[in-house]
Amino acid sequence: MKHKRVSKNEIHEVEILDLSYEAYGVAKIDGFTVFIESVLPGEVVKVRIERVEKRFAFGKVLEVLKASKDRVDLIDPLGTRIGTMPLQHMAYEAQLQFKRKFVIDCFSKVMQIDQDIVLFTLGMDHPWHYRNKAQIPVREIQGHLETGFFKRNSHDLVPIENYHIQEPEIDEAILSIRNILRDLNIRAYDEVNHEGCIRHIIVRRGHITKEMMVILVTNGKTLPYREALVQRILEDCPNVVSIVQNINDQKTNVIMGNTSNLLFGEDKYYDKLLDKTFAISSHSFFQVNSKQTEVLYAKALELANISHDDIVIDAYCGIGTITLCASDLAHTVYGVEVVEDAITMAKYNASLNAITNTVFEAGKAEVVMQKWVKQGIKPDVIIVDPPRKGLAESFIDASIAMKPKRLIYVSCNPVTLAKDVKKYTEQGYELISVQPVDMFPHTTHVETVVLMSRVDK
Image (cartoon, rainbow, N blue to C red; front, top):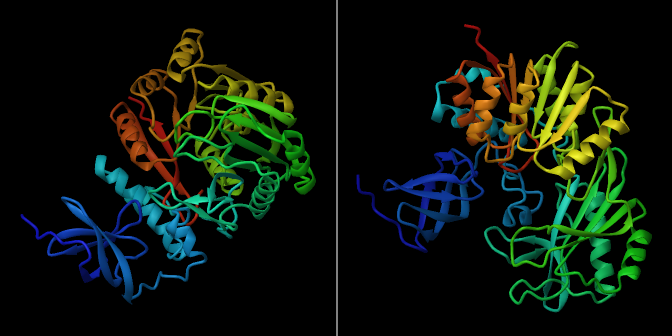
């Protein structure tokens, strides 16, 4: 069917039929699809067409003519403009329902699924100020060094002082460091000319310990007024235990480079998770929502149903967070991770917690696991927590060959999760439970924990 295309700057009244996975409202104008930001299903809005593509267009809301019962007042319009809080106009309970539906839709596209096994999304009692890590770009605007965030789909910096989703102490530290950089006349990075010094300020904070790490990402090795800068940061931010200069002299959107210089303390800070203490380095991955990470891991361990005789493999183990939390329940837990620095930290964390029933090895999970099979290691449970791209085919084959009784899949991307789960169900595993967890309130992201069980033949 041929649809009539719309034109830029046209104004229309439309009804919002659904939400895309990126939380754009979906409307139809004479059969032509229009995506609209900051709207909710069932609403009637007046929109102006902003951009027209071959198969769809984007519109901007001019007026909400009929509002949804799930619409709430914005805490901060900037959060929508920069994309850090694209769902803040939606009541939190509705956000949790949206995320469950997204998970169901991802599974339904690739396999038949009983929707009842997708449980209601586990949310937060207070879904604000939850991030324990901030990565803030630094740029010059009208002659002033500014910190903030890029406007959605651009590299135009919007100055921001309160992000609302970060721990307030992190916001305060960023402002203090911004003011110190201004006082010392240290130049912000100019990405057009690839000049200037400070590219990003990264602040990480222990939710329980309150310890802070500051990482200054610089455009080259030079850091002017280094000693004065360090001293001022320590005076203004007394909880800082580590200051690191990270060098990134490449023309890239990647935030951190490969080389770092320690300016103060050690390249680590500490935090606690499920009664375990973790040392976290400047390059370590650590979940950014501490409260919900405990919810996520507790659910994963509950579904894993580990007994004291069980052998467990934690693939993509990072610095050993899940591995060490599972160690109290299992006979032995094996952790594998391709990043060598992470394995160094994982071994350190095991020692820090006096845990002796874990084994860590650096390398590709599928390769290391094949070696473990030859050594006679037969896991009862395999836990995976891969990056967004999901699992490699070779990993899936290797894990199936080990014939674990249960597979726990922790995922930050329901699209790749569903595709991977389908492959397991085609090779003798049954999908038992799917639990979405809201790690990132007011965003479209959702974490999911899945339990699969081997079907005995």
